[in-house]
Image (cartoon, rainbow, N blue to C red; front, side, top):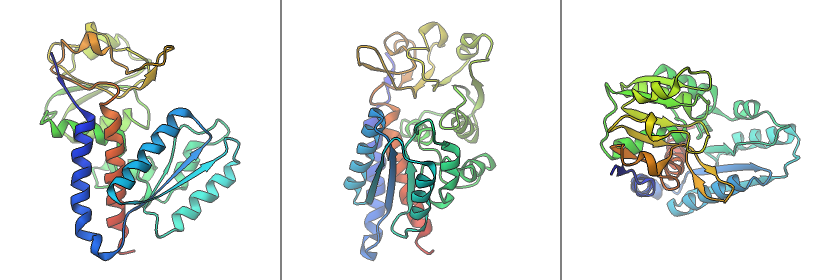
Length: 283
């Protein structure tokens, strides 16, 4: 049976490390501030926002939550983001995605001050990632890398396949794996013989949003399987993009859903917020 990569345990370890670092600067009286903006009442988004708020409280960070109606005009949302850009008590801004259909997410993201882009989604942040420069990294992919590092799972020189090419996960995930010296292939809806490509991978990261898409015949013996997907079945059960029960006996290590990558996203958001705070202290 595969090693189960416990995101809750690793997330706790990451946040304990942040707490230790924060203790050193507490005497200054300043603390990191995170503003989360939620437009509408998407149930999953409401849950995520609650978890982010709780993480801030646990660490002693300042947090603001801005809940806007689903019909909020784009100009009003952009105005809020600009005001948060100017607020010295706020070091990180996160606009919860997805947004209602009438709002342009890219326009909203580009309005965020890159120094406060703790979700790592601004073109400036993504450009730094591609250039190999230090910066705020996309939380979910960075969380995957932190988890692999925690369990001392090497990726250097290994063949990795990322399934999915979204700007939120797939593309930055591939870039971080390249940065860690993996040989990376990105699969998507137009990939021919996707099962054959995935079967060659020593590390598989599934991030396409299709429940139980990755089946046992797609995974080579001993592969490391990371499941980024979160899907709800008609019965209300949360499942990933990987058929966990079928694939786990074949993998050397695997993440569960829930309790795998999800908690790591929160942990890396806190890490990014603290990093942004340190970088803005002198400004």
